[in-house]
Image 1 (cartoon, rainbow, N blue to C red):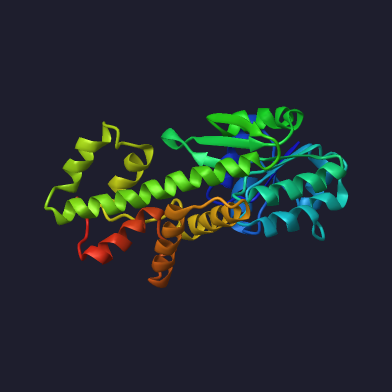
Image 2: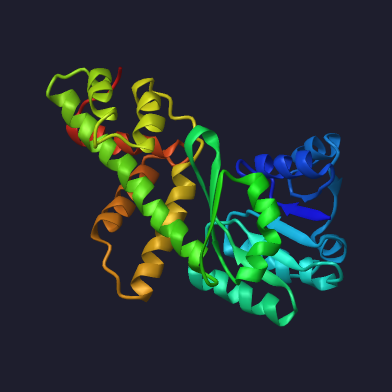
Length: 288
């Protein structure tokens, strides 16, 4: 049996895909309403300890590594009663060092660990970037293929988390620079929708532009990826970069922009709200 821990914005759809494919799934989340939604669809509620006893493979996606560690190694955690468990995959956005620590602890217990954070791809599908031993990756691959449009074993333990940090730098800076650029266009008196149409098919076009510019132009800042979550990821980027003496000047500036938005109580908005920082500086508002 397969288990899934963490049924939030990303976890619930992934868990539903597994349930639809296998016809059974063990689930756990602190939100009783989400658990009920899943059990009404045919899933079975289990505690982490029960999953360790009854599930061969377990996936999780949780807000922080501290929560992941508690679910794994805390009182009543997955490892408190290992019997069936062979593989554990963490889809959370954490640092490579944190992933390697969890890998080492589980390996001592005879359980394979793969760090496999996710990123949204085209058409709302997910891309998986995995780190771990090839045999463990292959053991989890049937599940990965069900939940993703693309799955790549990047390298040894921690490599998936490293790839996710790189991904978050590119995505977040892309969205931030869209804000800065379109504020310039607004100040110069050009129609932002026409700029979007003219730019999206050229080299300046990107998945980020296609996904975020329509929301900006409609002033729709309802969150799929909140600034809070992305600030946590960028903090992980900078911590990891500092640990290996890798300068990140642009990403450091983005972190300061996020801090500005936090001071203005905008952290629950979608990260396309980065544009509000540049709008504040320039004294304009970009609309279609």
